[in-house]
Length: 253
Ligand code: PGA
Image 1 (cartoon, helix red, strand yellow):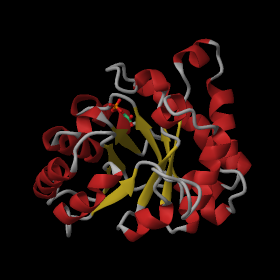
Image 2 (tube, helix red, strand yellow):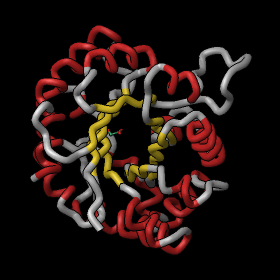
Image 3 (cartoon, helix red, strand yellow):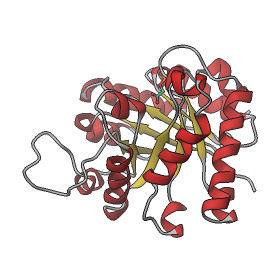
């Protein structure tokens, strides 16, 4: 079963509209002649329109970094999935480690956000991953199991089939310490076997599981050559068109 590679850039709280437009325009040029691969970027909500306009016609999808569980109402400061969809987003990034650990989002809340995103027609990209103390305590599989079980709770098989997963060990995010290809592959293989047992072989075969955590042009090809690593979710190295295009090239190598 061959899964189409997927490289996603998480711009985090960087790049206001002008800077997002500039990077989008550069990506449009640098990624014009790429091969068979999906590419998405996740700007801050305020820069979604600018990124969409700058990348129009380039086959680059745009996603929102977070959504609230309700569509409208007295929830000052939040963005809803329906509004992100209306603004032109294709994907919703959910459960990123910064949402979990900086903003205290629970597995259950993230599961609600998965439902809200699907209801609005957004494709969820669900992030999961253990902290360093959890890894050192031998809890990697237990944490991944819990995050998947709760994050996907109540979805039909067909809905699960629309979710992209991103394994991002918290200790590797923004630290320059990448999981070794073998460490990442081990967890990705666990995720795939979990999907096979919990749902169905077709879901395990077709779900794309991206790796994230200090991915850069120099390590992308080796990570992505692992059998169960289908792409990358890139933070710091997604803020430069040169390095992001280098990662896309690495995925096709
Ligand atoms: P990083 O971030 O590539 O800067 O480690 C990845 C992420 O947070 O998605």
